[in-house]
Image (cartoon, rainbow, N blue to C red; front, side, top):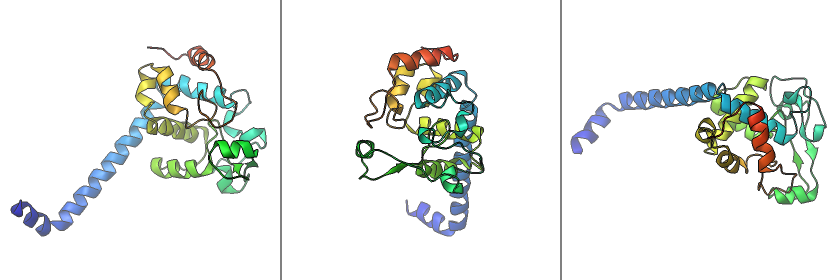
Length: 200
């Protein structure tokens, strides 16, 4: 152990550079997994299902929808609450309380997956996203799914389990408990299958 400690001290710079390289490799591998997953047939069907659940799928451009259809995004250079194009919409006090926020509060939920500004900022940095384009929104949604531990479930067709794991990410999913309208599990699975997704 003493020899190892001496070697680390003697090669401090080499150790630091090696750690940095390993971190960079890990980040790239994680990003590549997200990029690969976004083209998976089941993942695409699940993303379409989320748009149905969040109420954005019925719009001509789901990726431009802001919460409550209160604004249509025109500038996709970043999240509309960052560009200043749209600063959000006030929520009913009951919904604020349901989300664990003291009223008054407002939602900055935007895009096909109704991603709020703080969540977007975190995911944008993690994935190195350059804009709020449809592709970037898809990648962000897949990352959120992955962080909920549901990505492998979706790829393997375990959709009920995936929906359950994601329920705290999207308020429209069954048993989310945020006080918003929730879709039924049956309607979500039906939509998923209609969009070409497979069930295990």
